[in-house]
Amino acid sequence: MSARHLGEGRQIVKIHLSGEWMGTTSMALQNAAEDLIAVTDVTVAKVSLERFSRLFSEHPRLAMRIVLSIQSEEAELIDRMLTSRRHSAESRVAAFLLDVRNRLRPLDQVANNAFDLPVTQVDIADLLGLTAVHTNRVLRSLTEQGYIQRTGKRIALLDEAALSKLAPRRAREPMRDPSWLPEPSLGASAVG
Image 1 (cartoon, helix red, strand yellow):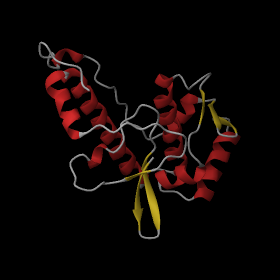
Image 2 (cartoon, rainbow, N blue to C red; image 1 turned 90 degrees about the vertical axis):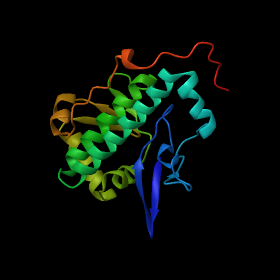
Image 3 (tube, helix red, strand yellow; image 1 turned 180 degrees about the horizontal axis):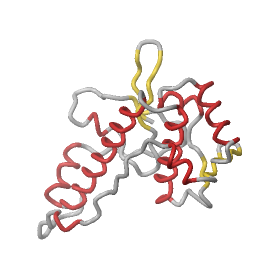
Image 4 (cartoon, helix red, strand yellow; image 1 turned 30 degrees about the vertical axis):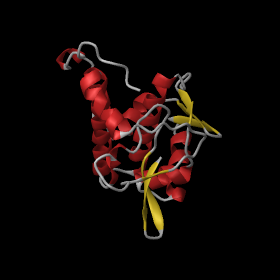
């Protein structure tokens, strides 16, 4: 996860999942903008700025897809920032659960609308601007209403329609038509 340490504590900014880019906000800065904290076993590959810049000439479609992915993350962060003060805790937790499920799907880590939550309730609370106690209450309420089922770290979304109605999420459809992206240059070498 990405976090910023602030005086006596920290503020979690993003929960990263397998295959996602991390630390991209620091690319344009001399010092890291965030701390990266592993809460599970991870393998990390560092991509130098020189190597990343070669993508734009040698593999422009891949480079633009990465840039679009980073921009999508920024849009999600802005949405969460705007909703954190204007929506109920129940709404924020519902949006979080739907987001994690949606991001785990392409990794084949969702079965029967259920997935393992990769973080603790304390982490969720920190990410959403809630207390751990309130987050626990909200998860219990969502369970009692039949929206979700919890078994340890396993979360099953039982009533997706109700969760979606609760969640203050803007419908965002990623750009999938690559026709506007530049063609790769002839004789481009592999990025190494």
